[in-house]
Length: 451
Figure (tube, rainbow, N blue to C red):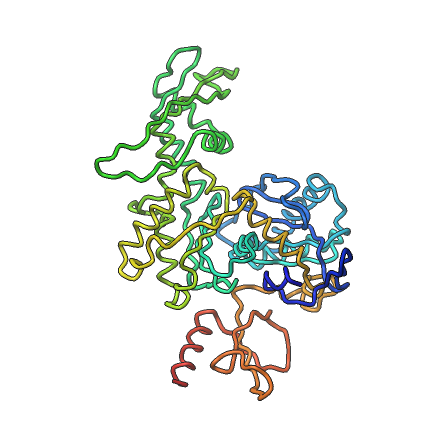
């Protein structure tokens, strides 16, 4: 109960007496935890300190004629994918445990519906979708307010969290992430040159060799040799780095057999590949850098929320694993805060929340901790669930009017609360479907009228 209270789950989930522990039969603590990312999928069991395996996520089906994929198209993809996860990766029977699925808030409804249907057809007892971006908070249970920075493969997201609740107004995203680093690294390697049989290849052949490199090979080069140097300062010379060589087997000059080629990774390529994460978005089509996302996230918070979240930053995602990333990001955050009048007092007041878990699996570990504290069995979607056709969607906000009662506590100043309720759920309360913007506007108007 103490852990559940710390995580905001509420008490009553069980108790401990001496060396004996008792868990309520209506709570679930053992689940299969799945974190499906754009590049990698983390799969394992709750109550463990790490996933059993990290596998590459198969490419998602491509849209044809810019039409959204249907449930049946997604279902075909996920049926094969989940069969591989259970029988090859986890080597477990699907009917043995419920599934805790980390949900990306930008997943489409058809995609989530296909996931749930595919899992339930595998005889999974129940499925629960939880926000993936929020789970890294559970790695540090004492933290209630923070700024979350998740640098994934295809996207970087920054959001403020107050009282362990996502402030959706502050959510900012950008395509500047791990994939952008690999694209920049490929362009830099073309100027470095290649060696074959102790002889330098001409520029045309070197360019052909670099273009043949797969993203997996570029990712291996980035992990081994790339880093984040400190920001440049006038009159101060930056650190110097050495050349590195990376061997690959490729076809050159139209030969049928592969040849061993050594790619030279220059100090400039090692240091400048990660600059795309911090530089200004000056070119058309480029997204905001991480410091710019951080500043806009704070500016979109209210004054009260900004004061709460100022101080703690939680990092997650494989894109923050480069050596020197934390020091460089902190320096860039302090510099960009000084350029905004509203953020000047906040500079030099931030620090990163330390954790022993690797950045890549922090969201998965947070979900494992969340499940270990106990989840009510009724929260899981199952075949006999009444509202299986109406999956909860974070974009669906409905206003629930609360009747005033002298003995009950008012839930808000305006006599109503914003709740996440699936469409079609009937109840005694009067509900009106509102978009997030309409709900917040109506709440602000009601507060103005009261004042």
